[in-house]
Image (cartoon, rainbow, N blue to C red; front, side, top):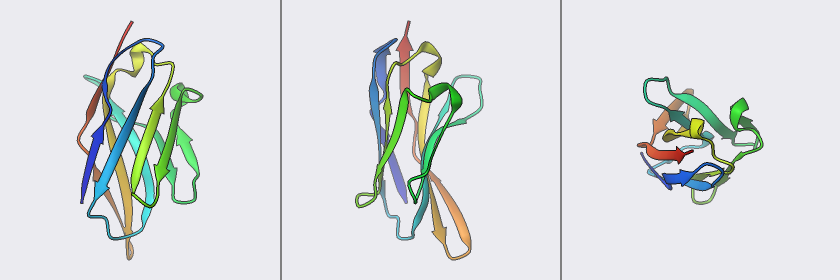
Length: 118
């Protein structure tokens, strides 16, 4: 299984970016697709995720600014980030949880760096 995240970059505060995560090699049902972020010196935190039934969950500080979506057919997940703030600067990682029998396995992509200049 491989996850490839892209779309990061340098943007001014107030700007927007759209992150994409392409998956390959997933043969079992996906239960959750999501995005995490990790700023220097800080732990990796959930930004947003979406369950297979479409239920979403967002970090409080991004509610109303970030929007997660997915393409079930292509097994891709996206993160539209609007009104970016300097505090959003971090490496962003996509994550997929896959159900295989009684096991719930998690797969991570590499980070894509988002830098917001104030």
